[in-house]
Image: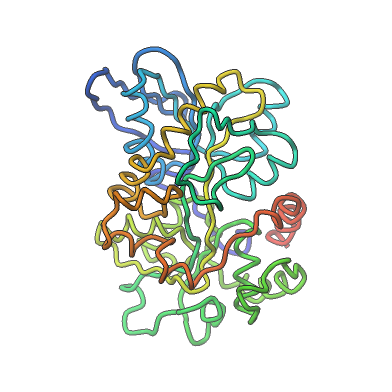
Length: 365
């Protein structure tokens, strides 16, 4: 980030900046409008629900398969925002001023949220967990997708050069030259560094922090951009500003469907979940739980993964709505799954804050 240039003022949608289109919906008038720079509103009849997610093609998939159908079916006004973070949830809970009723959070944020009592317990009288993968059920959250952060590359940019097939190759800048990008955070990078240093996937946790940062030292000067959001990672790869980058498999798949020559390397990928959660003490808790129940249904998840984005459903019955051909593109497909390791929430819950501070110091050193 400090050693080389940073991308600023990126075009297109990011986790915090996105524009949505105006349209119509059967049975209810739909109006879309920007509310401040990071918020989108869907208008329908009665009630209001504020949903925060990660923007870009991912949130677009939620909008089409989950959010808009919920608004239409129940006559609810949906206010969308992007840029979720557990620190922001904590600020809202502490102030008892809620910008979000339902928030999509990654595993490490959920673990911290549960440790600090920042999230409402899931109301199983409302939320039907039948069919949900056991790995996607926690006291205060329900998983909505399986997803992978893995190595990706631009085939066209490489030309005749051999492509990286592992994180060890990514660190081998001599034999696999080309500009590189990684996410600006400790999670995933420290795990990838250990894989590159020869640590087996089943021995990554607990992370040997000193060893991981030492390996990060070896690649630091070769990172052209430390990316900050999903839209940026794909823009870097698409423009070939980065020939190689860590990337989210669903975003890569969306680009592939648009004929962008990207490839994902499942080997050494980190399998994680995103979760629906409700900030503690939220007065709109009941409607939030109703939305979660709707969003994790087999039919809704099946439509989302089949039509809009290649993440893995947490409702196992959703595969009834997904073709075998599409299933092969998903991170939870058995052949893909066996090449990956699982992100350890129990490790990152208590270690996220201190290792984030260590990362911030390292990145500017």
